[in-house]
Length: 80
Image 1 (cartoon, rainbow, N blue to C red):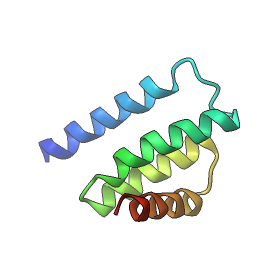
Image 2: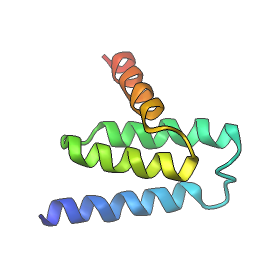
Image 3: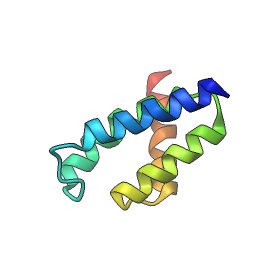
């Protein structure tokens, strides 16, 4: 359970670090941070963790979770 707690704290740190100084409502910011954060989220083994962080990201950026999930799938395909 400590690993999950540590990863949660790390992701919260990454979200706050990446969002500081950015206007999260700007389209360019959404594009840049979306890619950076989704690549990290995509590396998680746990589908539950992925779902949690995709939901949080969707709420922060006001982007539907389905859109973020589709982008994550596309990033995976490009990485293969």
